[in-house]
Image 1: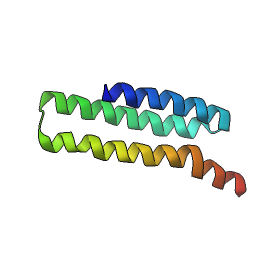
Image 2: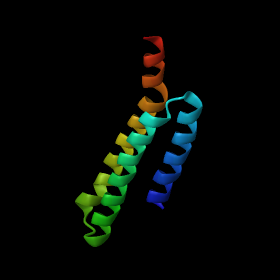
Image 3: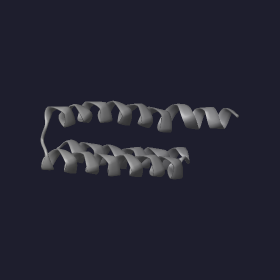
Image 4: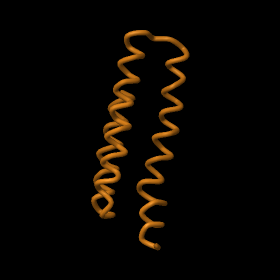
Length: 81
């Protein structure tokens, strides 16, 4: 379910990035993050430990921060320059 939420969020982020004409940079960031999410899921399912479970929360925070930057701050700053 968590991975489905990440992938769904990536799809909506890419749709928004297309509208903002900032598709390629967001595609690169989301692709890297989705690959990291898949690796995290794989690692956790093969060896479920509390330490690995905590990384889901850390990853979710990083995901949120990068999505806000990719879809808000960075395109706005680049257009102002």
